[in-house]
Amino acid sequence: MKRIAIFSIILLLSFSMVFAAGAQEGKKKFIGLAMPETHVERWQMDGAALKNAAIALGYDAEVAYGDADQTKQNAQVSDFITKGANLLIIGSINNGVVSAVADARRDGVEVIAYDRLIMDTDQYDYYITFDNFKVGQFQGKAIVEALDLAHATTAKPKHITLFAGSPTDNNAFYFFDGAMSELRPYVEKGVLKIVGPAPLQSSDTANFTRIATENWRADLAKQRMENLLNGDAKNYYLDAVLAPNDTLARAIIEALLTDAKYINNIPVVTGQDGEVASIKFIRDGKQAMTVFKDTRDLAAAAIVLADAILKGETPNIPGARLDTQTYNTGKKYIKSYLLEPVNVTKDNYIEVMVDSGYYTADQLR
Ligand code: BGC
Image 1 (cartoon, rainbow, N blue to C red):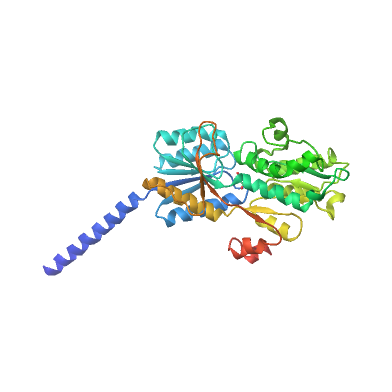
Image 2: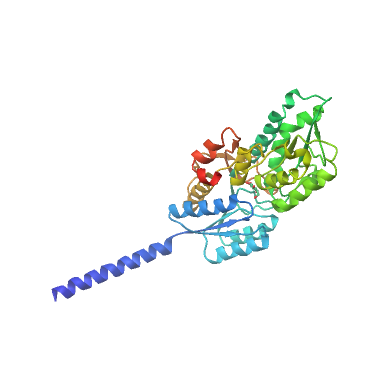
């Protein structure tokens, strides 16, 4: 009798433990992570880092990649909402995302715009990114220094050609304007000549469109560089090419290396993201620099922000600067948390990219 009593107590206890665990499981909040694409390497790192950070803070999380197709991403977002997501972190593709953001708001699901501002809507409140203007400034400064523009003359000007990122990505405008804030004074002095379309700022829409690269597609950048080499740039030696990110930089470098003029005399080409293949190019002297935006930091910061929002607390994001005056969707200013990008060259790539554990020494072999 006694044994039976103990047995049933144990049975009862384990039942209630299973039940409690189940209830706790059921209570876990769910964060949907919608990333824009995989053809640019960083987003795979973002996706993985976001998921890990969310799970580490006790959330359920799932990642979906939109393959640069907004219709596909909207379906993924809608799937997250159906599955009961409490919050969405969205790295968007283009303006088509606004309907998904409106659906989220209607269902009481919070949205954080991740890395890329979501435009033309007032249906969300938070944005987390790196200082995008500063990314461009690093690129511009690298060119100013490498070409020693401070000492260039109008008698012997330097030549540059300009590339920008996707016109569907608000960041592309910031990168370009940051870079031109450094380069423009030299263009105006006549010591730096732009070969090809020559917008001095992104608001010169007609010319900006000519240098922009739809959906950050490497094949389009390569094609455009080839066309320039056979056209506008045929009778010049290009000292530099402003490239907005590493994926496009390598495509541009590939095109340059098919031209005998550049094989042993590669122009200064900028980049962004610290992609492994570009770090190798930097080490080998093919690419001048990159701007590293540690996806581990951005992901961790985004999840800390998500956690605060879900708990109704005031966000306090270590390493991020709150800016409420810069990023406007066209409908309202968004509370933006900005992290600091890092300039990477041959001199510091080991320290920044390897010593920090982002890549192993083996990956760079
Ligand atoms: C990101 C860059 C990335 C580019 C292409 C931008 O929005 O900020 O890091 O290289 O998209 O994916």
